[in-house]
Amino acid sequence: MPEPVWWPQVVAAADKRRNVTGMLLAHATPHVEGGQLRLGFARPDLAAAWQESGAQAALEGALAQHGQSMPVIVG
Image 1 (tube, helix red, strand yellow):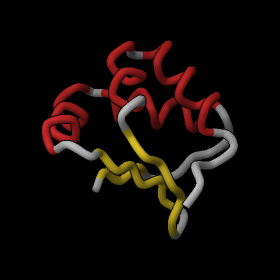
Image 2 (tube, helix red, strand yellow):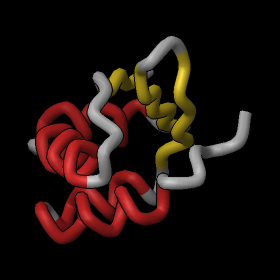
Image 3 (cartoon, one colour):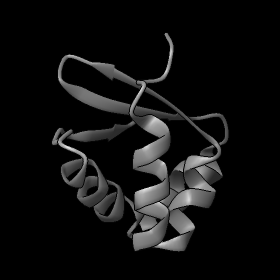
Image 4 (cartoon, one colour):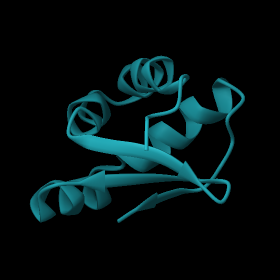
């Protein structure tokens, strides 16, 4: 499934909010399913780092800033 067309702008905005967000999102595979943004990480340590970093809040804020308010699910 291709990544959403708005994804690059959201990643840039999230990275400005929290630098680790951009680094982690560089390793994520995003797709929208059922009104949710799903992020897939190939390595479990990256998924764990996502959960511990506060990056999700930065991404959710960036999504809202770009008119894409939706839940973010990792897995």
